[in-house]
Length: 307
Image (cartoon, rainbow, N blue to C red; front, side):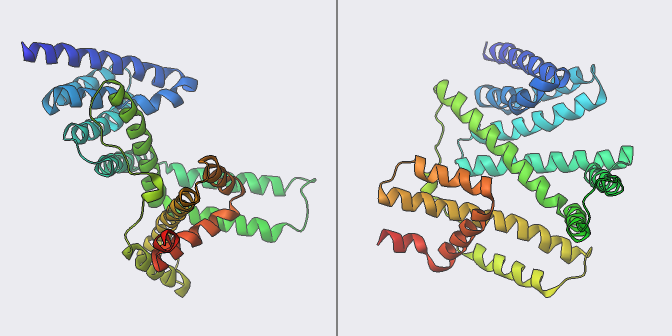
């Protein structure tokens, strides 16, 4: 009786997935919204019916997706496998950090697989080709009669930045995977709570903190970046990506300090929220936020504020 119930419920979750998938695949405008919920049927089925039922659902979804096109199979594998992993971690009642880590790793593997597959099968490097198209467009604009003179230096610097982006593919994949995993976890947790499932909550953002050792890794990376490594070498690419990832981690740490200070002062949540929005809109304040994060890890500002 239990197996029959699981089979019926798994079939219903599979039907829901195929509906969501069809909307995401065939309706471009809605697809951008529905792509975030594609892992949900697999996550919910894993929580309710276990690993084996979800594995059967994953295989069935791949077979049904093959009816559409081969890209549809790849899309299904990307979100179904991520949903399978995230759902299994939810079922084991792990902490929110473990759920986020598992989801991020699942998305990293899938995005990397898709990226390599596109290059091998089509011979197209999406990021490199997009940058080359932008450079060609800039060259065409420069040749137009009305293009302002005296901007050659700025344009050269901009082109150098575009070339540098090609080295940052690993960090972009990691940050994209982290974003997808976080949004998936956010939606899933809210739905599971409505379904009366026990879901562990994150600590308040003001209490988040990176390990103190991260500051030493970041300083080592900064020193290596100032040394002047040969462009294009493995060490150069590694340092460039670590600098981006650890720099963003310092920004996150800085925002936790702002929220912690706001909490100590008894300010409304709107105050740090406005600071956060303003920092991303103006960009320059992000450097100050990063400095706050560095100072907190180095000098333990949080404990000083509490005392």
